[in-house]
Length: 544
Image 1 (spheres, rainbow, N blue to C red):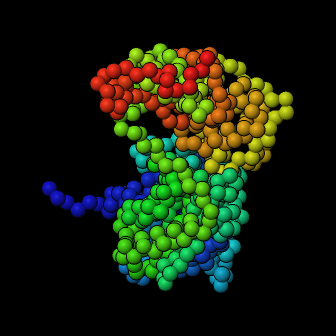
Image 2 (image 1 turned 45 degrees about the vertical axis):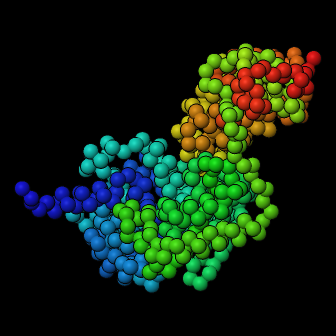
Image 3 (image 1 turned 45 degrees about the horizontal axis):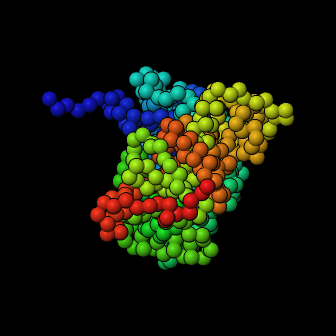
């Protein structure tokens, strides 16, 4: 039987649709602060935002008489035309949802108002009082989901919820680099960003190595404008996690057509399945973009999608054309009938000769093998390092190294400190964002210049196992035999024998094949023979 739900249940459902985790609370109140013209904010959270979230801003404030209305359902000062949304918030449901999910206090004072007003609300209860207050607004949200135990139990750990909030703040500040934000977690200041340019924000959150490889993007035609940063081709990632888009100040997911326009320009410059890094702020007329297309407000649709894509592609082409860019190597295209080494037991190979002091030529039964000596040696060293680091004791540094961590790395360290200790990194706090590194894995002892990069790389990857694998791959690459290094027959044979004993001899740790193979039958066919054998010694330089 269809029946109308009671008001109490409707409010609980509405709260759950808008507020599912502490990060949703932060998003709602940050949107309100930006819409109010705030330029300085202080965010404090306790226990991942579950116990407390407090945001102070210097925005224009809410008049005393309008404060009770601000926490009612679908009450807002922002929405004039649903077809031309100019603010981040517009539905008037954020504070209303928060009051039914937690205890909400709003303290606010507009510039011309004498004294401030405070509103305290939990569920249906709303209380008002007059209090002294600075210009702006302070929103405090405490005891999130205290009366909704099922929702409380569904939250992730406090550390994970904290990391979600940190990632959201990074996204806000990369798209709004002029904002000044101080972030405190569990009564400890984690970082303070003073505001600045896109490049300064990128340096603060992504580090100088990344920021120095970004190009300034600024282009406008008519009412369309794009600004931000995009990377040179040498700075590419296998994921799009650092390719960020905002439309009219709102952080959104990439529309498929717009992303394709970007990748079409970069496709001749990047290897396959790689993405540029960057911050793209796109401005279009408010009436030309649909914002109210998803509950999360993170998807948009352009009324003139083709026109926006043409404009955007032109902007990227002009940006890249204005800078001397080294073209990335194209993907390797295997010749017909030449295959990668078979995915079974690696055969015993007989060394025949070498080509260009880079490729070893070998034979096995009725097959001709070409082995990349650098890739093969990388694989050997990589597997040796994998075995070594698991049994070797870490090295205590005579002089501890001072490490300065950015906000992303600090959040990652809280999650990974135990795992890093198991790898051999012992860190101790030495200030708000500074740590003292007391020990390192033995295999890093001979590479002091890499220690800081390796530690930061381990903190910045999403998966610590993959991060450490990348570290070992890098360490294997450094001493591996390089192109142009001539191997005699004895050394080449030893390399082939050692490669055959590897667990995964078929590729280097970066994924490139170590060997290509061509059957004698295919050789005979190419030479117009009918199964006759060829003499390899006459075809290649033979090492004695």
